[in-house]
Image 1 (cartoon, rainbow, N blue to C red):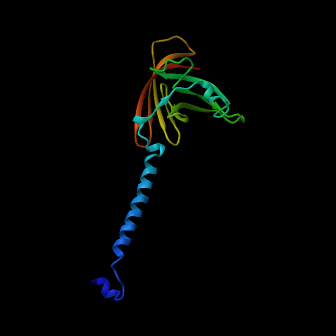
Image 2 (image 1 turned 90 degrees about the vertical axis):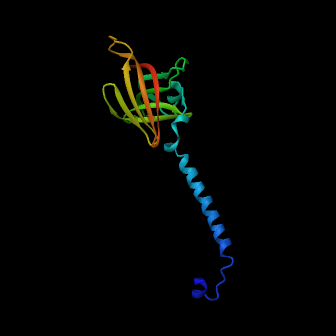
Image 3 (image 1 turned 30 degrees about the horizontal axis):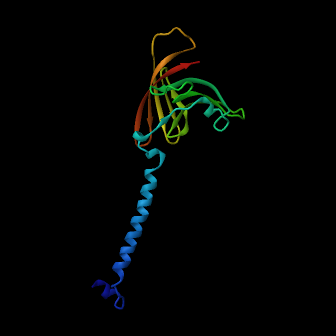
Length: 176
């Protein structure tokens, strides 16, 4: 009625079909945006997170680094029985060009080697981050040891994304 008053010669009969097409296109566009946001690494639910084992050779093959100068901790999950295979390594990663070494944590998450830079450290705990993940690790010596070089430890590692977190319990060796 009001359309006829303002636009006297304007026919509104086909407008409902146009609105249906516009609505359909908007739904398609929004579903694409939601799908992309749901698959960003920070939004991946961690109950589906796979922590794969790896050996040091996967890191020092020149593709990631030529020099893992000093692997301080090598930890594994209880079900990882492979010799020289780990689920977590921490140590100084040194670029081939001689730049400064960066103390980092390395894990293989969902099939990809993930390197996280250390941002803080205490006597038995550390925090590591990259753009997708944060790792909080708390270490406890397994038994009282007199070895100045290092000791067997139990570690609780909390892997966090922007929206979720997963706790992993590992054992291994940390030393200098």
